[in-house]
Image 1 (cartoon, rainbow, N blue to C red):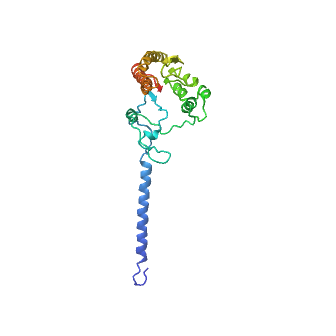
Image 2: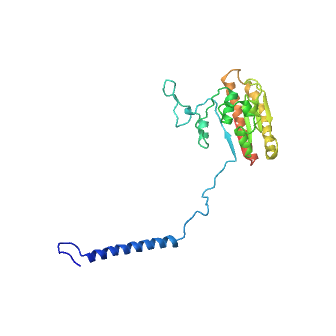
Image 3: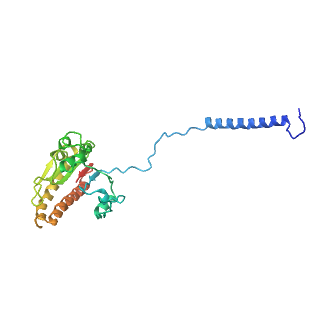
Length: 257
């Protein structure tokens, strides 16, 4: 059937065009479903490890008491109370440590005296005290030892009995005297695989303790040099301990300064 010759298309042609579109759509859908059912689905049945994780066998935790991170961390800027910019410190050796270590951006101890401040740091609890530290399972040392680590500490002027009790081996100054220190070595939890290592570390600490007094006697009481010698001895002892550990054991060890 036709209509007037005024430019309108023949109905038969319009029907044929729509039929062609329907055929193409049907063919496309059929192809899609064939691909969907015939191609096997991809799934993650296996996990491939590209690079193995290099888990360290030991760790050294270095806390510099009173040194704000803004003075040494490159991304921070120190400011005075009036808002003026202060000079940054340039601790060469600490900056070298940063290059091969993990940095903690902010550790806040709301209690400024030694016992309270250290209790907060090792527990993560702002109201911690030495009694809590001495309890079972309350400190970073407990977590470390539960995971097979040993804990060694060089505390200089000492610390609370709670923290001392959590170390496999600790050396500290019982007299709190820089001019005539009384270095005491304590050992705890001497059993299992870490016993021989702990005893060898105690021997190393004992050997190093015999050198401190002679080094201090070289300088005048109250001088800056005697304070420096006191601190340098502790750092040298820590380095000796780390070197000794690397050569003598395969056990995981965590050392605290």
